[in-house]
Image (cartoon, rainbow, N blue to C red; front, side):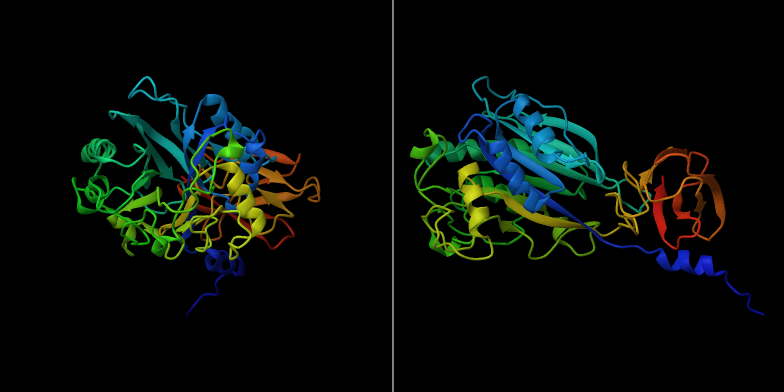
Length: 415
């Protein structure tokens, strides 16, 4: 004889499921930040990032630690919800005359920093950041291995050789990583054509890890209107209005890239490229040899956005998304209803669960925690608008917080 299944169990069980989670990656050459004009570029960058909301923000041409802190504290964490973090700022070690740095910022509700390193080259460092993906249902840790580079600028055989040598140093370093590593290689590569040795090393393979251009748009990018929709430099026909910072010439080069290891392009991989998300942000495909702010460059990116990009840098940012195939819970303060409670420190925890209640929740309300099969494992009463619960005694798994007399369930994952 079949037994009746408790209604609460059905509610909880039906809400359990495995989902995908998308992460937005953004690379931006910030052009001598923060020195280059105009003086309000932090505010300009804030407006640009508010539109994109990257989960991982990779940059080059950052001048100093003060600039990094400015981006972290006044651009990314400009509201009460402080979610972004950054690794320690590292000055270039490859050559003493290089004053421009690479750096990375990440949403710490979705990633944690596991490891950093520097690859020295003959010109400037390539920075390495290994981020652990927090929202992961697999027992093995899931990592993104992110490298940010700024290769040698300018045309000519000598400069091509330097770019090639820098990439050789990078591909040699990849021997330290497992063959199935999920690698992101982003930067201002200053490549004029896909026939350059630096690019060929990446896609043809000088190591056990080879790379893909997510949009597979290969060719002679420089001064070629056929690639007008992916050009990233220059946003300006002249730098006369910017104290000679940056380059002019208008939109006619594809210098900025986010490339991915080949496995990220495979559908069965844990981390996959989300199709049709790679874009030269702000480029409507009709600004060849013009200012990005030109009023004739109409399209998806509106005039206000293109004006900001014109003022911010001589480069456009590159944006794309990857998907975590093994996600079960959102880690960015997910809850069923923002009117009751939230998890300010995220809903993936190890020892303590931080809960913040909305002021409308009455004092002495009973709060219960249930496991996946509907068993109550803990109960307490609301005393204040926030509380920290010791959950170290719970086994690893998915749990649900439920306020008495309310139907909503709030998931968290005990690691």
